[in-house]
Image (cartoon, rainbow, N blue to C red):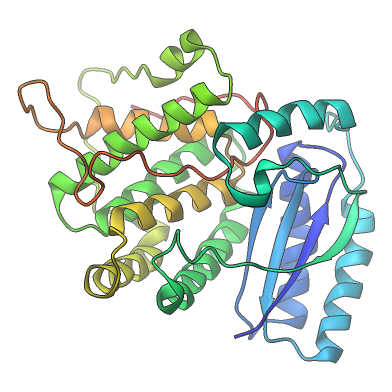
Length: 327
């Protein structure tokens, strides 16, 4: 499979602008011109805030039609509206430097200059190591497609911070449930909490803020949460469960590490920040705690205590507030 890739750059980090590009630029274009093609998107910060769009196996004519449609639609929908403040180059360099130094690897440790708003051709480089190796990458890309289609349909309905946070919670539970074992799920939440808290600290967030984000209180008598009710994420969960089986059989990478990355990319596609993702894991680790082990928490199976790598967050550090998921 050959992937065609474009980066759709905007002049702002405002989530409303990025949502608009997803629903008014990406969505109509793939549905009209590539309805039978696998596709997916992510949100990213390197070289300035943008959406990365990948569509598989386009012929030359369709490639040109897609690119023309993206340019035409982005020229209209990429215009900033009220409350969508432009990102100054110096603010970008400052926040991008924090992200790059906190945990990025390879070329992304080097901050690139901002690109102008518009459609830029790009090359897609699969992260084989993160997702269990080249042989299993097609399964992950299929899951990227499912996740992107889900978010494209859900974003217009997620009109509040709370609604988007609840979607992230449900999706993360669906990912964890792919492990199959209840104990592994509790370790998944606990280590997700630890990994994101460590990453946020390295990115420069103060400890008192992180304490506030990770403090969860559920009201007495709160409705129980069913970790196996996946709602709109049922199909995605089924794909993750199948991938988990393949990882256990064919890869040295522990499934929990790969599921962690898929849960992160769901948060990314929903437009949630590092702190919002940290809040997801804080809530889940509170509701589904690791069983008492005399004060010592064993490492997540297959990790030897290593903190999972945390991909770059959706928006530059400091963007977005932290919603409080319902208890």
